Length: 129
Length: 134
Image (cartoon, rainbow over all chains, first blue to last red; front, side, top):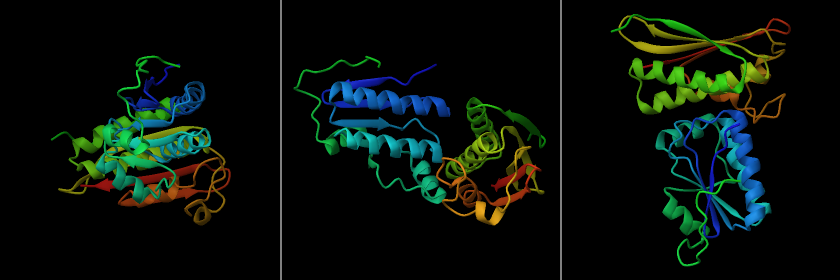
């Protein structure tokens, strides 16, 4: 089965969702991310959804769940790059995702997590779980 | 301008939900829906396609471009032969679910559509229609 790549940037993990995810792929991402947080001791998780044309209740619940699990593992999750039309639709759908922090872009997301990417020499970008 | 047409998609696996989203998107672009309206109807279709799969045991989505004499829109009809819904008014409530979901599928899909119709009875399957006009 396909997997969504998880990149490590300093003490943060970065996931860029670039495909229209079917449900199993979304569930696999949740499992992979959890394992990766535990394995790396990451302090933050950035999920870039700027390519996603829709977020339905299934994906919304997955994002909420990732945020909740990573919080228990001492990592902070920030969802970045949500499209305005997606935000409008999510609110009308009734899904406000109270447990999920958001930022407009990756740079502001990293600032929110408080993780500096440069200067700690811990890049292993491109490694998959 | 192409003539109104329809296509019927099978919903048997979660891949098919993705296909429904893509085909509804294509139809929405074709009738000229704005980006927010496209996003709303595609999201509503995604919710209902998942209901068809998870609760109806699979079924079909019929996507149709509609025209009422000038105004165009997209209509999608979801049908399954599953167990049906005993009490539709209860099922339409936010947060009500018999599965593991959030209970936003039906109620959310209604809010995201201009037209919404649901018919179901125990043992007779479920039919849900949504439409969004330009």
